[in-house]
Image 1 (spheres, rainbow, N blue to C red):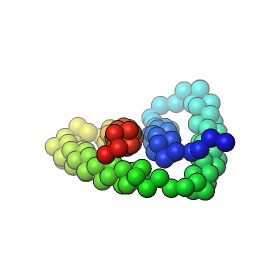
Image 2: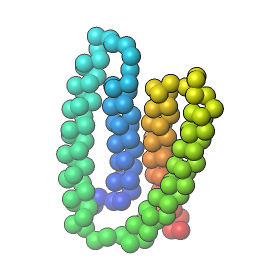
Image 3: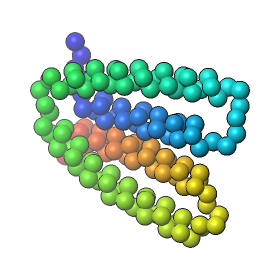
Length: 135
């Protein structure tokens, strides 16, 4: 039986961030097309099975011996990503203050969803690099 690594669980969060962005798109859009219910059904079904398989993998990971170096690297990556996220949110906040008459809440929401996906990608890449190099 294949071991579940912390790399897999960290990279798996990118899918979660994309799902959150898709759900935001479903709530924030202003138009309606005939194929939108199909997209909603597919995303809903995928989300359900995603969480089922994620729960199985997390449970399997917790049964295995912990990789303390990888967990320490993950904490360092989370620290770095917190700083990147703070900078992105400050940038979005100032852009909203400056362009308050031009920027809509929809645009701001898409900026936040993009930041969420960006943070997860940065976290995964940073963790992968730290884990490969043994930093």
